[in-house]
Image (cartoon, rainbow, N blue to C red; front, side):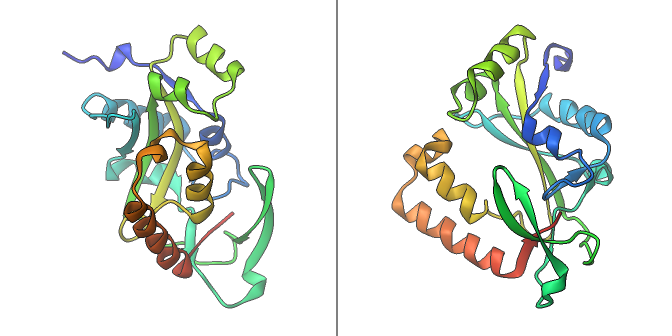
Length: 193
């Protein structure tokens, strides 16, 4: 039995911002097509215990997104400053670098319980989610080249400081390994906008 029809996907403000022409990181060019693929994947996806899923997007849907990173350059003119999530960030200019071919795309999707428990979710967002009887929240879309990248250093620090409940139970060994992976990845790759 197909139970996809019973699922309802709330579009988080982060995922919505990825549809704008000036998106920082992965840009979603075909929202409704990507939405359909994600809904199809949710039919078979098993969420981890914390309810924060990284839902793989099938390769035939990768054309719905524009890569959100490129190899770092040594040319200062390739970079620009952007305001992203309340702070100024230096990123590569999407129009000045060669964007890599993608090797993966995934949607960050939370279950209802995970979304309502997320410390970043405002009371207004919770009310809207409940009012429209959503079952899941599409938080963001990520794309990559090569192996799936770790979270960036800022995101990990933010999560560790209480911004993501999944970090509460991580061991020091897990955190050190994550930091080493982030440093290695960010020395080669940079977000584009």
